[in-house]
Structures are given as structure tokens and as C-alpha cells.
Amino acid sequence: MIMTCFRSVVQVVLFSVLTALATGCKKTTKPQLAAVATLKGTASFPMGTSVVASPLSERPIYQQTVLTEYSSITADYEMKLDIVEPQQGVYNYAPGDFIVGFAAQHHLRMHGHNLIWHQALPSWVLNFQGDTTAWENLFKTHIQSVANHFKGEVASWDVVNEALFDDGTLRNLDHKQGDGTASIWRQHLGADYIARAFTYTHQADPNALLFYNDYGQEWGGPKLDSMVVMLNNFKRRGIPISGVGMQMHIDINVDTAGISNALKRLAATGLLVHISELDISVNPGNIGNLVFTYALQQQQATLYQFIAQSYKANVPSAQRYGITTWEFSDADSWIPNFFNRPDWPLPFDNQYNKKAAYFSLLKGVGN
Ligand code: 9MR
Image 1 (spheres, rainbow, N blue to C red):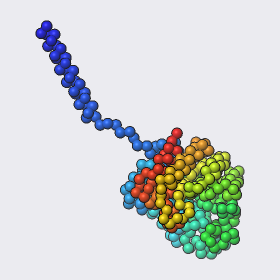
Image 2 (cartoon, rainbow, N blue to C red):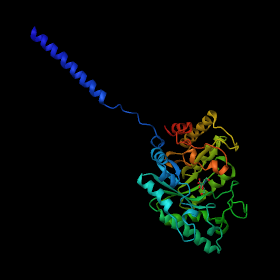
Image 3 (cartoon, rainbow, N blue to C red):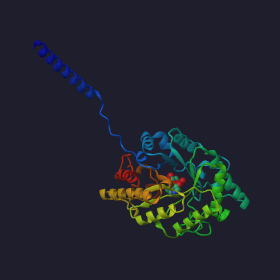
Image 4 (cartoon, protein in one colour):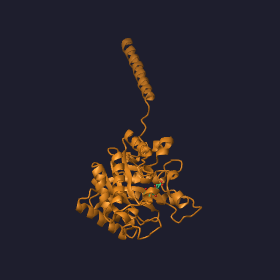
């Protein structure tokens, strides 16, 4: 009797001690935090942003956001002709090298931007005097020097940027002389210079994927038509082109059917499709004292989600090169400076906080 009682007491004490120990153990185990979703962790295709070297090296929140959210980067301007060759034969690769070094160190895809553009040209190019052969030599030397320098470090290039006028014809100096929209390349090199730019780039870096990059495809009409004709023509001729970039500098009044139509038609070329410079302006009317109201925030957010969903719906997965925004914080967007107006086009606000646009983009890229 005494023994049985003793045994029960021991059992109760033992049970209590074990329970206490177990509870104690549980208490000291840290609760598992649910991982916070990120753009790159959620999308099944690369998520990119353009970057500038100085904030990337100097501003911790900028660098941290790039590393947390994105798997691909593009340089805003550090690889353009006016920066890499400010004077003929004088190369300045340091800013571009910093960005490609950052990409390599953190295993980010590096998208090169750009080799041939009618803007961002230094005066030595604008004032260059020479015959057709001399121009061809300048053109080829520039392309191959830059492609060769970044070879093995960039995955891809925007080889030619914005070669078409909005009416779908090729930019050239005869068309709209003097207003800055013409192309000195077309003037001196003839209409087929775009194809040759691809061939020259491919000779210098056969492993890089080569893109034609432009804006306004979502308008449909002659610009999209001409682009599709040109891309199909390059494919038929065996010109080494891998993809097309749809910049998508759009605003909240955009016709969404135009976006889906453009994605569908560009995907039908069989090329990779990159949404390459996305931003969504909320102040296309240039209103000086505009307030970024809740309604505007929601309107913008809905569009970000729509674009991601339309991209998935219209571009087959094997052709999705990814979605890249042009910078990621409103603090660093080109739009307020360029148009001299308040605007809030990107997924992060001026303080690098996530906006409604961010959460909708995140929802849109997920499955
Ligand atoms: O955002 C870029 C800005 O910082 C540069 O000063 C400018 C000139 O190099 O280029 C801007 O980027 C443009 C891009 O290269 C092509 N599509 C339009 C972009 C905005 O103007």
C-alpha cells in the first residue's frame, strides 16, 4: 500500500518535472517567423531593377533593397557611350565595372544597357567628320570595345535602343532634324545598321543574349507593326537577336488592352520578351501640386498587378526574360526631374518603404 502510494507520488512528481522541462524547453525555443515574401522569391522569372553606381555603393537601404528583392540589374547610364568613351579612345569603365562587380559578387544577372542609342552621345561623336567607312569603323569599334570589355560579365545586351520614331519609321536626321529625336547612326550608316549592330556584338561576345529595346509597344499601331516586321526580318535573315525589350514607361491612363496585345504580338515572334524599364506615372497631366491620394495609389497598384498577370498570360514561360523596373524607389525615378513635376511611379516610396504598388506587383508575379 505504502509502496503503491510511493510509486504514484514518484510518477506524479516525475510527470510534473518532465512536463515542466518540456514546457520550459518549448519556451526557450524561438518561435519560427514566417519568411517575408520578396519579388524575386515569388516570381518564377527574373525580377530586375535598374541601378546607379553611387547609391549602390553609398546608401545601405538602396543596396539592401536590391539584394533582398531583385535577381537582375541594369545600369541606368554607366554603360552608355557618353560615359564609357567621353573622348575618342579614352575609356571610362570604372562606374560600369563597379556595377558588374556588384552583380557578380551577389550572383545577380547583369543586363547590359546599351550599345547603340541616338542619345547619350558625347560631342566627339556628334561632331565626328568622316566618310561612310570611317563611321562604320567608329560604330563597330565602339560596340566591340564595350562588348569585349564586359564579356563574361553581362548576360545580355540592349544592343540597339529606340531606333524607331513613334510613327514606326526609322529615326534619321532628315526626318525631324535638330529636335534631338533623330539618329546620327541611321544618317551615316544606312537603314540596315541595326542588324549590323547585332552581328558586331555577337562577334565580340557570342554568349550574350542580344535584345532590341524600345518604348511605346503598348500603343499598338504603326510602331508595334514596324517592330514586329523588323524582328521577324532579323530572325529570317539569321541576325543574332535573342529578345525584345518593352520599356513600358507608362501612366495610369494606359490602355490595358494595348499592353496585352503588345505582349502577345511580341511573344509570337518567338523571341525572349523583357519588360525592361517599367514605371507607372500617376501625374501625366503635369499637375504641379498633385497629391498622391489613396485612390491614385490604388489605381497604380492595380496596374502593376495587371502588368505582371498579363505578362504571365501572354508570354510563354520559356520566353520570359523577366520584369525590370526603372529604379525601384520614387526617390530615384527619372520622371520628376525630367518632366519637372511631382510623381510617384515606382513600387517603393521616397523612404524605400513598400507601396501599395509593391504588394500588388508581388501578388501579380505569384502563381
Ligand atoms: O534614367 C536614365 C537617366 O538617369 C539618364 O540620365 C538618361 C540618359 O542616359 O537615361 C535614362 O534612362 C533612359 C533609358 O536609357 C532608355 N529609355 C528611357 C530611360 C529614361 O529616360
